Length: 204
Image (cartoon, rainbow, N blue to C red; front, side):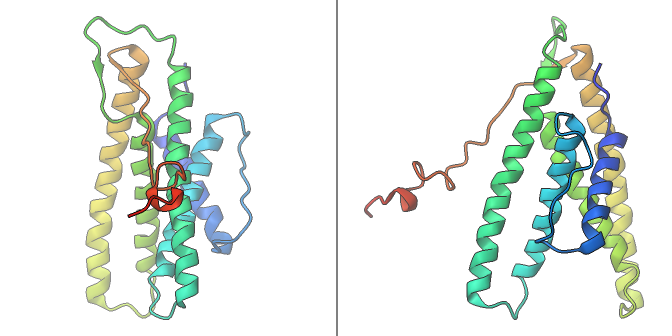
């Protein structure tokens, strides 16, 4: 049976975040430590996309950013959002395939949130936790700031435990046939030159 749980997924997300911050550069070369054909490699790649985008979102908010750079970074973020969605759907496709032989119970219920979209939330949450922890070591931070950060970090860690429980319960139900998943696609239109009227040149 599939060897995947919240602890394993979060450990992969944390590894990706730590590896990114060795150089802390949005343009650094990506290297995946996992075998390309394995699910772990998709989870690592997913978080790497999230981590790069996190820092692009910081860059674009600089009050000193030049207009040309702002446009370039915005387009990178837009492309990253599409990559993120594509990766979530690819992870769901892999999980769907791995679960294809599970026999559904007669009263099995469908879950509206797929496992990969729950993993997406977990990936982003690990980024929040990492960067809130960073704030605790700022030498220029006031006691008031540190107290605020510590309080928010506590909430994030509670959310981490909650999401882990939700993922494990969902995945156990999927593996046992108590629940079943359907693959959903976001069908985003704005990046598709055949669907976005600005890109295919529709007259206003």
